[in-house]
Image (cartoon, rainbow, N blue to C red; front, side, top):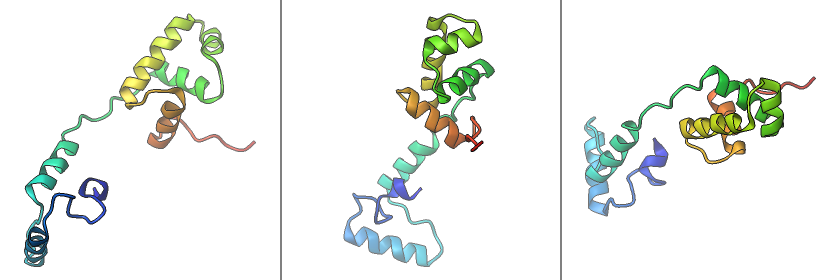
Length: 119
């Protein structure tokens, strides 16, 4: 939430007197958000939840996380390389990323993929 509000917690648009009013309002135990900050906050809250990955999408992503190329993943899953690319495109869309590395990192962060263990 602090990232939404900006580094000073009040949003970049907040004027000095607006900040003072916000502090006074907060001191009275009331919510103290400027309309601009409230709009940004609501916009963030309205974003749809990330869709869960399908079993097959997770299988493809696990292989990619392990260093497999699209061709290698296709061979291991007995599907075509273009099908692997399709699954990866779906993963990118669901995770809101644009590349393999970001997809893997996001999947680890979300808990979709188990963290690698030292063996």
